[in-house]
Length: 79
Image 1 (cartoon, one colour):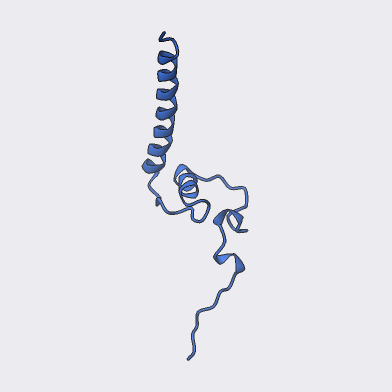
Image 2 (cartoon, rainbow, N blue to C red; image 1 turned 90 degrees about the vertical axis):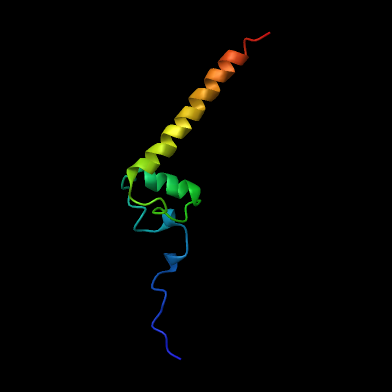
């Protein structure tokens, strides 16, 4: 039995952030950053190319932080 499948790089299975082609100090967009966060650095294209999903998660994180700080400010002064 002959197969033409071979593993050309040892980096094929490792995390994407340690691959030489990714780690060339290029800027990444919000989707790539959130994809790396959700997959623990395994893949940077899980969320696709649409920038709205990355913005949604970024604004959601900002809204949760702002809401938490406002609620803490309100409830800390209740006696």
